[in-house]
Amino acid sequence: MRFYFLVVIVVVASSCSSTRARITKAATGSPTAGVYTAPSDTKASSSQAVSQRQPANPVHDAPDIRFIPYFNIEAGDILHFKYAIKMNVEVEKLMNTALYNFIDHWWGTPYKLGGASKKGIDCSAFTQMLLSDIYDVKIPRTAYAQKTIVQPVEPEDLQEGDLIFFNTRGRGISHVGIYLHDNKFVHAASSRGVTISSLTENYWTKRYAGAGRAIQDKLVVTDTKEAQPSF
Image 1 (spheres, rainbow, N blue to C red):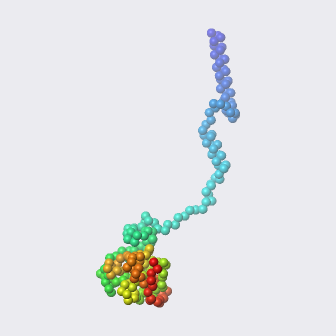
Image 2 (cartoon, rainbow, N blue to C red; image 1 turned 180 degrees about the vertical axis):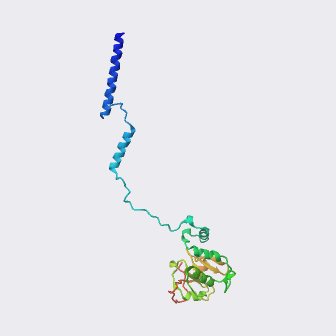
Image 3 (cartoon, one colour; image 1 turned 90 degrees about the vertical axis):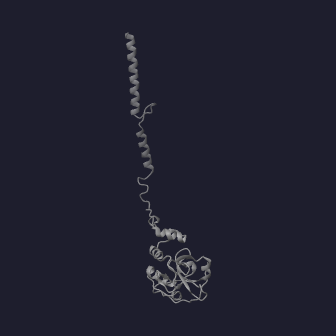
């Protein structure tokens, strides 16, 4: 029995010595198989390595990115979408809310020669009121007189608010409208009243007689010779 207990004591002592040796090597950093290393130590080392390769604030000196919105579609009301559909143009082009409110107010008003009210209006009275109310520009009452005081504008240079003239009777200027966008213009038509038409329609293309820009205090007298459309 004494021999048996002696053997057990020797084995236990040897095992304890081996364990102490492994702990000592792990503490001193010596490579030892089977020694567990905490994951946090690995992550900390990786972070230190990355921080050495990159600056602390890599985008600190980057320029600011600024967006300047041309038109906020979400803020557009039903009026913008209504006329974008009527004209088949992008809603972003219809920036002049006052203009389209004016058109909407007069929309469908019947044509009446010499008229200037919701009961009936003619083409030149409509353009005269539109330019006065929306652009604060005063022009004469008749289509012929309006043609004589504008600065001529070529078809490719047309802008919103320009006057469009037509010879519908074969006897000089007899009809006028206001240019909008993408060859579209608003006018008081004898057949449909206040409406929007296109310069590319065969009827208007054949009767086109020039265009002009009425700029208050810069109006000039121009030749009334009829121009031919270039589109």
